[in-house]
Image (cartoon, rainbow, N blue to C red):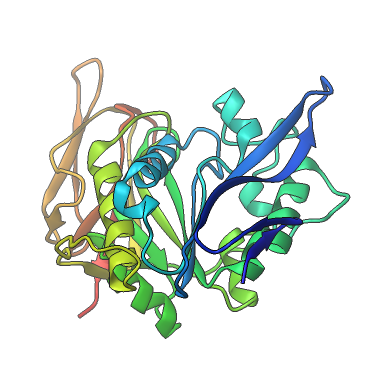
Amino acid sequence: MPIEINGQKVQRGERKTIILNSYELHTKTKLEIPVQVIHSEKKGPAILISAGMHGEEINGIEILRKINSRSEVQALKCGTLITIPVINLISFLYASRDLPDGRDLNRCFPGSKKGSIGSRIAYDLMKHIVPVIDFGIDFHTGGAKINNFPQLRCVFNFPDNLELAKRFSAPLIIDSTYREGTFRKEAAKKGKPILVYEGGESMRFDYLAINEGVNGCLRLMNSYGMIDFEVPDNPSVKIRKNTWVRANSSGLFHMSVNNGAPVDKGDLLGIIFDPFGHSEEKIVSPVDGYIVGINNQPVVNQGDALIHIGMSEV
């Protein structure tokens, strides 16, 4: 059977780029969102791999570029791979997280056919993409100045989520509840699990995050027999709870731990120095856990989030 997306068909054994839909800017310019489909001759799972939900999150875009260029993927043995390298082309043009009207696309779901641009994109994803997939991975990065260690976010209470996460085998697997208006939550309502991969920070290539994302996709496809390419699993750490360590004073923050490192309660994480040399404040870990994200901004104000710590399962 062919796969059909917004009236465009991809036959078995065919590799094709189709258009999700076109959207009009205030200049009357039309923007089209390309969707790349590899539909093998043999039946198997239909996987969505998407990136660029926010226009400044470029690590995921590079992950998809690398995946699509691989010969094993181009000659898919079974199933279907649907990739959307840049969901939010409009924000990508502006290197912005938000759409021109200030909305976050990942708070616009399930969307509306006659709503804002973000709402229309969300509607098209829900109407034309979600019905034809079995599950997916949506690639993101940390926000401005926030560098996330490679991690996969899912809901542990749903066994299919955790099974997919184990197959992907990111260094960290984090129990993350659904948020209103997100692609992940609305797809889950349709019985289609979407896991979120986070790695690196916005507008900066992070090659550890990129390589882990590529390897995770290859592991996932290999586990379903879609490709024949072995990648060793990570010794993944499952994170149940997390907390941010914040600055108690303002100044210049010097970090003394690496992203992803294990820490014990009381370990020194860094020091905030008064820029005039009068005082310093030691920042210590309040818990045992792992560094899951760091703030790379050295100039900090009182109350700023500095280090994200995840606590593993007992």
